[in-house]
Image (cartoon, rainbow, N blue to C red):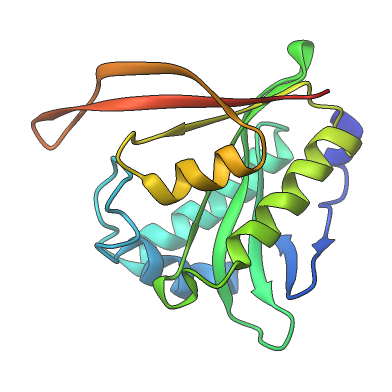
Length: 181
């Protein structure tokens, strides 16, 4: 698994190129993370500056170098601007496990694009990285994310009550896991 961290893997789907997140992506990432709708089911504050986006880009690239995460930029094949990010975090090499997550600009919601990215990443994770389990942590209220997860065989393994303290309120978290067959 660790040998996949030498050169960043580029994946392709019918409509997308999934490539490494680059410095030029900071503006698009800022726009997504500053959007109230994108953040509506994620316990994180809205991004406040392009500098914060650039810091996130740098941290994502560093985490790849340190073999901790793999963050892809989703780019429509006929455009240069990214429309979303996705990837694996918190690799546990000994147990062949990682977490999956992502976000997409709202104007691309409901077009099946997230499914394309998700399918490509899962296939890469299972076939190339030999992940035995892929885990997603989501808000139990995020029906779209849960529908996507269950479509691809993720099973609800846990529901933690009052798991995350965010802006003075405790929020629940659901854990969905895909087991390699």
